Length: 178
Image (cartoon, rainbow, N blue to C red):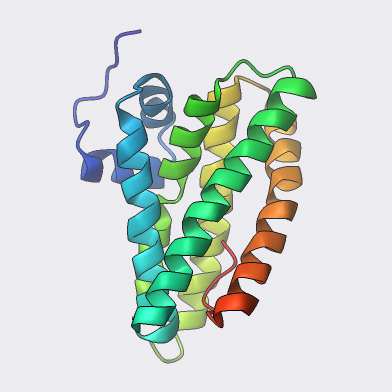
């Protein structure tokens, strides 16, 4: 499948993913070399979460990175299994992993969560934005209806939130749950 995306750089793809651009999700879905970029996105969001939530201490950064990568793998895995076995999706594990990774792109704005008065609003808005991005990512990766994608995202989100809470309790890091 030939892509119509012109900017396949990390930043270009992150901006497209944040804009909920279906073409970007289709592009990263089919580009196996984009898995590393998706991992970088998850790492960048982890750093932004640590900075915005706790000022970027070493332990906060470590906890955020652990929670981010574990959460990415878990949410992607559950979405893949539900999508394949219950929703008749057509994605591979890698396709789901890449699209869900890039769907984290709006999370770089978590770095602004430390701002007085605005931080909570920013975090809330980013949280909703991320859920919307993951919805688009899952719908495109699995090639399922919007209803099936929504159900898949929500069912996958439950173990993700449990893992995030457990990780944050163990590390003492309490930035955001998405």
